[in-house]
Image (cartoon, rainbow, N blue to C red):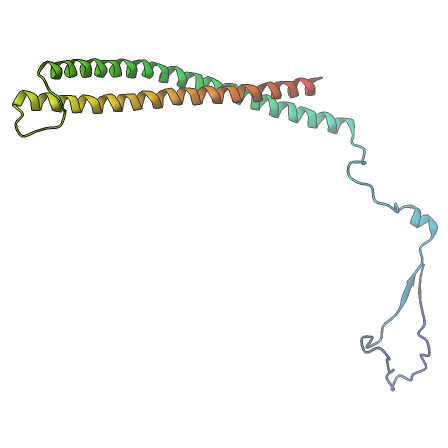
Length: 190
């Protein structure tokens, strides 16, 4: 029920404006009082309920679980595909490692033979000198090139082994996360 509250001492004439004691209350303002019946008040709860207290329907829960189950299944499939990709890369890199090891071994054997030849010729240093003959200069160049090749192939071999170790670690991390995902999928399926 709405009612208007009459102003106190409102005996002014229409020609004479009312003087206000408070300068903020300028102009004609109507003061209104609103009374609600108890039956209307009962329709509005006094304390608001949180969203967690709100009951959810069974079909909505079922739909949410189905959505989660589909998402987890898709994630598991993607993880298995990633594991297969990493395994194929490891197999390819392992083949390359075998080839790199053979080339490294060939360079090592060449270095051993070249150093043996240098010892047979009485060479004491690999540094080039002015008095060296053509054979000595050739041998020193070959030792230097073989040493560089040996170092390069060792670096390549080490990087390939490190790459394989890194991919194996990635696979182990994916497998551990897959176990947790499969456990969650089993829980949702029940």
